[in-house]
Length: 325
Ligand code: FPP
Ligand code: MG
Image (cartoon, rainbow, N blue to C red):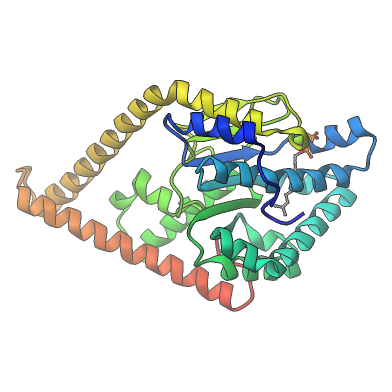
């Protein structure tokens, strides 16, 4: 199956989608696609078939998301911990990725038609070289598509991602590009693999496990978490609709929490700028103009730092080796 299913949705599911769309809709949904091996056991088929059907389910789910005007989807396709599985299983998952990413290049017209931009997030240098190259080609081929975004987390764990971001900021301080006081939640967010995306509004984990397994820990602080017992390859459009209903039921509380967090983040930056200003001027007077200048300088420093990081990751992409991130 290709990356986006071309199956047309049933009349009933389209009708239900139109009712759901009358309420607040998540713009970004994340999935922990769990339960492929249990599905394979249940159906008495090989493990790799469970994963292959898991991929087919992803393609169907993307179509259902588009029907609901959900334009950003992030999936946990392979965690760094998954490297600890048997060699046979890791090899078969790599073969699936090899197959699907080469297929992606063949069906580029279909992805263009839907405007799908594919991003692959993770420590790509942990992957076999040929897959790194296929991923680089797929990412470059779809990078200008902007109707919807599919973020595939591959060789990813959240703590690895956060550690990488902290290391980059420490490097920025060491190089004199930023000051220690420039390190804020916002800057850390911009150093994560997910920096191009808003935080997910809704996260769905299938298979009955009720934990995040090191997936998007930073990004899901204010996300509606929905755990469903269905095994991923058996996920149906009704499970998606039910999760959206849960999001809608919790929408007001989530928005309130997000707004409070944003106000807190602005307050932190204000105090950080004030500290820099006081240290520089040697007095504690609040001078609005000087404060605005200090904030402007901080923004210039952080933008320059982020540009340096971006250029270094592009240089490694173009040289055929994985991006630094
Ligand atoms: C979790 O089920 C699933 C995975 C570790 C792999 C998910 C991968 C896909 C659905 C294919 C995606 C591929 C690409 C190229 C995007 P599990 O293996 O943990 O099953 P279990 O919980 O029943 O043991
Ligand atoms: Mg599992």
